[in-house]
Image (cartoon, rainbow, N blue to C red; front, side, top):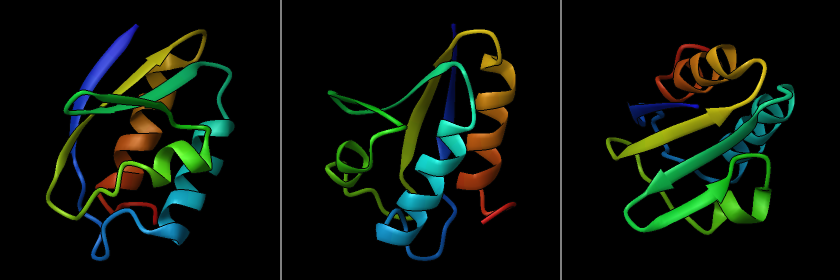
Length: 86
């Protein structure tokens, strides 16, 4: 299992379109991928779960991945949230 703190660096934060793209990116991986913030932990492959977080630009969250491709999954999610592959 890998855990990594990531700062959201998307201009509009995590609104509907970026969430849809994030869910697509997470779903490309075999690993289980979760986003954790405060006392909430949601499946990054769930649009409804991700929408419930209401995260804004500048907020810090934790990306958690467990499985065969956990390294790549965390790296991809981190790149997306940092605005590198939006």
